[in-house]
Each structure stands twice: as C-alpha cells, then as structure tokens.
Length: 298
Image (cartoon, rainbow, N blue to C red; front, side, top):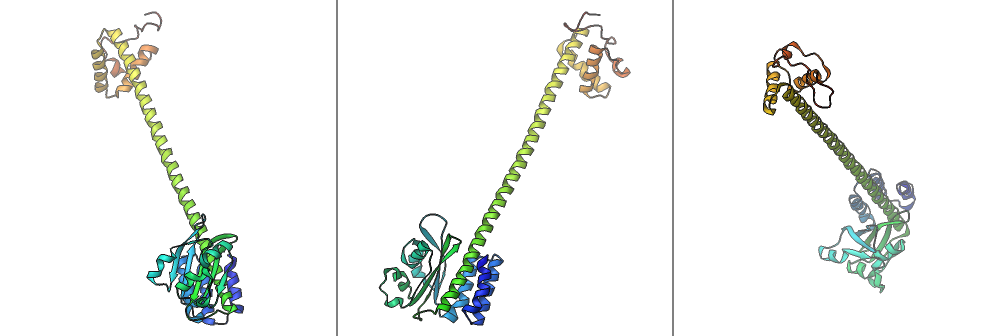
C-alpha cells in the first residue's frame, strides 16, 4: 500500500495543521489495519472539514464494469438531495468526468461558473469543489469529491492534502476488495472441501452398502446350496431342510451362517463336523451323497 507511506511522508510538507495531520496519519494507520473504507472516509472528512472549511463530501464506488458509479457514502448533503446523487454516469457532471479521465478536477467560484458540469455541485450549494479518482494502479475504484459552501477556493497545499488522503482511501478500498476476494476464495475452498468430504463419506457408505448386499447375496446363495444338499441327502422338503438348519443353529449355539459353512465344508470337502453338530444330524449325515456334477456318488 504505497499510498499510505506516501501520505505519512508527504503530509508534513503539504500541510502544517498538526491536529489534522495527526488525524490523517491515523487514517493511514486505519487503512493499513483494514478498517471499513466507508468508516475511513467519514473519518477523513471529519479530519479535514473544519480546518479546510469543507461542508460536504460525496463518495462514489465503481463496480468494476459498465459506465456507472453508485453512491457509497456522503455527509453534509440534505436528504432531499440524495435522489439526484444515486448514480453517476461516466462523463456526467464533475464526478463522472473525473471517473472517465481518472484525473482530479478542482473548481473555485462554482456559484459564478457557467460550466454545465458544475450544475450538480452548484445544486449542493458549493462555492469550491474538488473531485478525485480512487485508483488502484490503472484500475478505477470510484471517486471522492469535497465541497465548501463558504470558501471561494482551496490553496494548492490543501488540494494536495486531499489528493494524498484520497490515495489512502483508494488503497483502503483496494485492500478491502482484495481481502474480501481472498475471504470468498477461502470460503469456496472450505465449501468444496466439505463437499468432497461428504462425497467421500457417501462413497464409503455406498461401498459398505454394496459390500453388505453382496455378502448377503453370497450368504443367501450358500444357504440355498447347503439346503439343497440336505434335501437331497436326507430326502427333506425345502421347509424341512430350512427348519433343520435353524434347529442346528439354536441347539449348538452357533450362528446360522457358521452352521451352513460347517455343513457345506463337510458335504463338499469331507471336513469333519464338530461333535455337537454331528450328533444332532439325522442319521449322522456323512458326505456319501453329492449334487449332480460333483462326481460319482459314494
């Protein structure tokens, strides 16, 4: 923020009013600390209004596109005059011309001047009027204008103070804009990060659900296969084979899937059965019968 250091170094040479000088240096500090630019412009006006005999200011903001500025802040202007200040078109009045050319303009004896550009300033009662562009490099941020209803003109040193102070406000506006953009970017990153986490969690839940469903289907198929072998080996109906599996699970205090696994291994691979399970099988079931396709029956 070069304008802040420039103000601190340049004010002493430009103006000898120590109280206002201190106030303006506080303004520079406030800009560096990212105070609200609209608060800073009010403080700026309060700092220079009395020693310079200023009665009002008008601050416009440029949105960054188009050819219109919008009223951002003002002081010393009557409520009945505000509607005429709502927007400012490039090239219109003094403020619009300053925005268009990005060049400061100052006028004395406004009440005696016939320049059409001063009609708005004259309607505000100005006798002296100075308008400055708010710039961030070559980028227009807005304008800031000051008027006095009692003084016919401002000294060059006073205009220089206003220029330097306006540069501070421009730096504050740019600083605030950049930080807002950074805050918005951080917010968007946070939103995207949370969304990615949510999607990751949802993906994990979906995978778990698929695994559970796959396991359930596999288990169901295994139960159906063992049940079929029991039906074939023991001459049972589908319901009888199912009831046998349930009863074996209950009487051996084993989970149904464990009983099915043990019986399947026994019938297909000749694996020995635990004694408590073998003793509860009708006829002491042994792998003497196989399903078609498993080889010759023994």
